[in-house]
Image 1 (cartoon, rainbow, N blue to C red):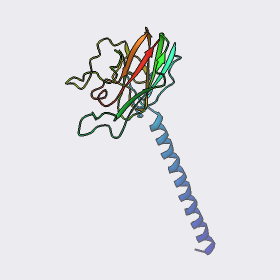
Image 2 (cartoon, one colour):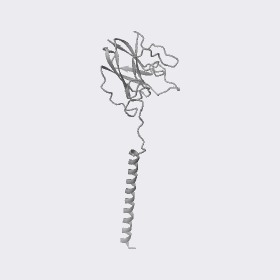
Image 3 (cartoon, helix red, strand yellow):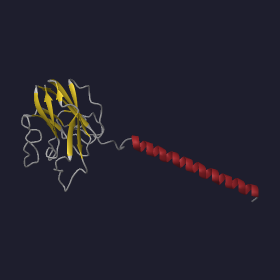
Image 4 (tube, rainbow, N blue to C red):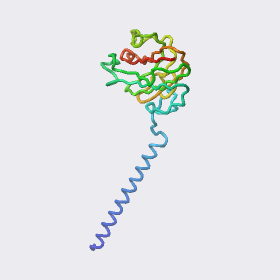
Length: 202
């Protein structure tokens, strides 16, 4: 075979190899695309009980336009999610804070954001003066919720649920008469760990 024949053959082999690589890459890309969006494709996990319209539990949608005075509350915790297999019970490890300490009576909405690493909630309880943080914690590491006016404990939704997941929000609107109220997280151990704040309604 002449040098020209060798050169042509080498060029043909190289061109065929390049075409094969391009074709194989196209097939793999098509398979990957079909697998990501076709039947049987994995879909993001949603919080079916959250009222969050099928959103992933850790996405915080915009709350609806809430009526009345809007109190924005933040729920946080320090460190890991558990200590020694139980929720941390040390005062100051967790915190519930609100951007209002006083509001006018009537319609009050609570927009609650969980900025911690574990589930939290907000429950509104009537409060006798000087009682903030002094409720008796029971054997179940919770306080008595008798007289509760309502709560925000639904991930990405309104009202009661199983707890607001990390990075998510919940909300509730209540008609509050004048008085003193304690905002608490009453998941096991959270009140004893410092999750309470006072709200005065005038």
